[in-house]
Length: 275
Image (cartoon, rainbow, N blue to C red; front, side):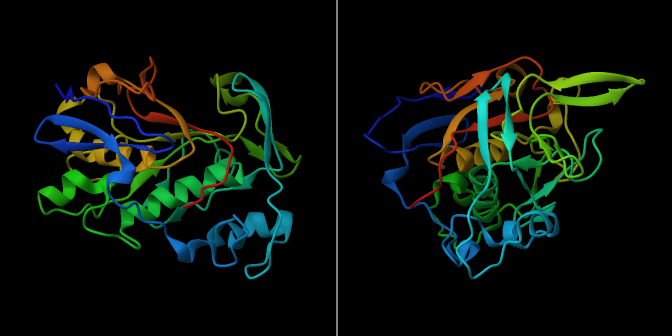
């Protein structure tokens, strides 16, 4: 079981974990540099370039890299009674991550606000090593043992979108056995992202930590959690702390939640990433 050291808080700083053998130390990101990936938003309009060049987004919003485009996306309502207006589609693969499908057709379950998609892309860039430095907090364990992850992490459901009817967000409903089935209580506003736990065999397959606990790459998953915690706009992370052996952090961002044995759930505040 991972043990926690003392949480240190500083005004306006972000959290990070450092794993040394089996001890997690909480510190402040300000203690060591966190890299941005400056090339991903070349025109500085707060919409990352790969979002602006994704075919569905171009068709809907006519983005042009090099021009200052307006981000049309915004959430309304609450996590359980809200929707996403003018959502943007996440590219199915980019540096550091891939999008995996559940039961939804392609390009129907990965719609979010621009700020949410930027956050996923930022973590993907960190994980892939773009603009990397050896001491970056979200790779502290990997760097300490001289190993750099080369596998991508899996991004699942964000919010439901229907380009034909211009419907984005709201209840995440799928047809199961000929009947409508509510797949998520949240995921309505384009602010929630499901991420797979990492596997020791380094494959890009799903993992249920209850059924196959020995396949969990706990240290790699903590590295990945570090990447998300290094962002300024993470509100909370829901995961199965019991079967992963990764406890809630004292800062209250990571929380145990039933129904998260095969992924963790990141919820974002809707504001831009700035460094």
